[in-house]
Image (cartoon, rainbow, N blue to C red; front, side, top):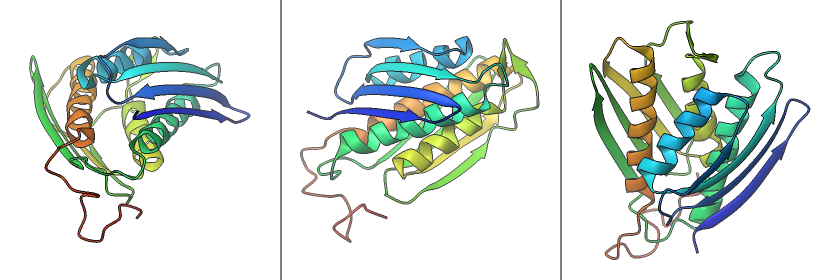
Length: 196
């Protein structure tokens, strides 16, 4: 079974994640940031990942530590659930619209960490969530999963639309990259490993 259970505890946050890559979008999410919880709903539902998250953090300061550490922990869970990465497609991409907004997400589960974020988010809030933290989450995920992740806005004005469609595109790209392809033999790399 392609599942993982990861905990991360620091003086700033306490994060626990259970993940099933071959789920049906079953969700049990608790974070202190309602908009971030809503984005995790998009990830699970549109990626068809079963996801349990328990996140606590120093949100009395701001949401940065909780958002970043949740991204890292979730990335680690994906890496753990993938094991040796045998039989997966490795690459995934999605270009999705939401009203006026359109975002492209591409991912390579390569074992090499690199993040490109081009959402152009201003220092503004969506509810109680700092919009710029969306890219902090994605960068943390790339570090935790040891993957190459690009999230790029093609167009859009409404911050809620831009961030939400970014998470939906992320979900669809991850679902494609983690999918097992019966035609793939072993690890999808000419090096024979996806260990960096």
